[in-house]
Amino acid sequence: MLTTLQILALQLVTLVDKLVFRGDSWRQTLPALVIGMVGIFLVIGIIILATYALNKSFSKKKDKDKEE
Image (cartoon, rainbow, N blue to C red; front, side, top):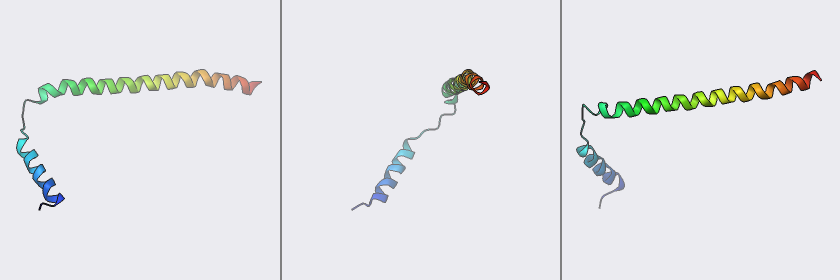
């Protein structure tokens, strides 16, 4: 009877046997990576700008309240 560790080791060996390294795969994956990273930076930039705008708009009201 196989133990859980032996079963996991057998599955890992069969998985590694099926893996094939393709040297030209970066040509397909690099554009997707770049598009994803640009999207992440755009979303972060939009969040930063929205936070900055909200901070500016609501901080003026607090300054006016303090003056009165």
